[in-house]
Length: 531
Image 1 (cartoon, rainbow, N blue to C red):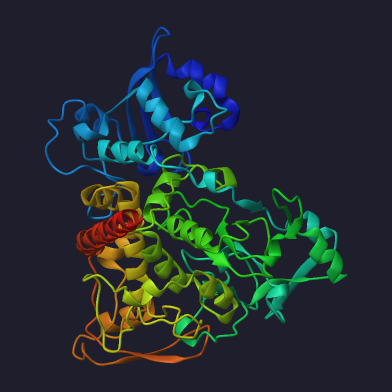
Image 2 (image 1 turned 30 degrees about the vertical axis):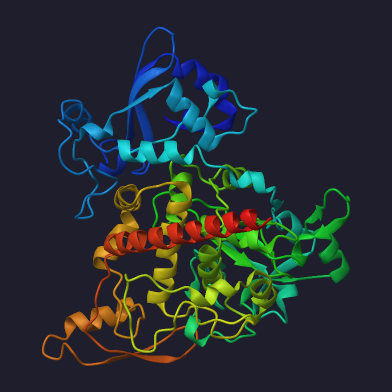
């Protein structure tokens, strides 16, 4: 088993292992070669006498023949990933699968994963599928950390202990206000705080329905499965309180906007790290974690943009664990590049600020530069599509992006802007997408269809469309299960090429950022010369 390479409590064993390893081949039992659970990870290792760390490693292997042939491969062809282009587990051999791990590699792993108090030789292992992955991780290791922001943490209510105390209990329905909202993990999507609502039946953890963003009211309060109980002053006082420095005063966490995320790490899913911004008043159970930064709303929103990016998700996946702690967030890379920050803030706010509850955050972060911003050339432009910069200082119902194609483009451009901020090249970003996110890649290539109005086509509509051979272009009417709204989907439906759109966005945003940096430097020089 592989747990000693990633368990915080196995540091001494890890140090003793690294200096003896010669070969480390990490396998996943997805081909069911052994009669154990198919997602079980295990290693085949060769050891020798202790010395300086230096061993060959290959990760995410599914069959022994892959590593044997990779040792003899000439390095030609595209690098393999988790799955191949047909959606099968990728068993293609390639020289890039074999990564040399030495003392310098351990240092880069340490920079990505650990705090300064952990000796480098005891660092947890990073699993790089290919050399491009290893090179991107090495670049990320040189960036500043989210931990340098000194975010305040909240674990939320304990679903068992605090419930037994009578602080809250099960009850389905819409709370009277955000002050009575208790969120669960399924409420959150990537950059989307109102992703799903629990069904009234509340049968199990998947008995939820996705919300209809187009029908979302400005004063929307989410449906929840839990409601506060007992004395509200006790409820308020019992939740997380943050001690503010240097004055030493205390402020309730629920008084502030926070970046929240699902604790459970879906390491093999479409996305692993699932963060969103939540408004004041909100509580959550410990299936969700949250952080805040009182008095610094722009920095909090910037952190939310980074958290929603593929690169942050990739950095979490590179050292797979079952849960995502505050320590995991702290060690992720961050940059506050002023040439990039306003571009990130606008996109993150238009994704997250879904209701009037985000009005104060919108106003606090508003920048006159927002109105000059615009979409890049990728994606899909439908009739009456809202311009990215069509916003004003006051939050309105037109602020949130509601159509699926616009939200996809905003997230994609966040991915690119984060890559630019961290020094990741366009080809490297594309390689991470192709090789590290096989489920997302598969959906993009064969499942996520859009219609002429920029809506994502529901599965049931796609099924009906495919069955209509003689009447292939006729409209299909569909009713949203959450809102009851009826939408008309007009074929033809189409897929979008995320990699191509990413490359287009990268080239265009790279030029914009370079121009912004040049203008900033020119303004600084003029100011200095005048003084």
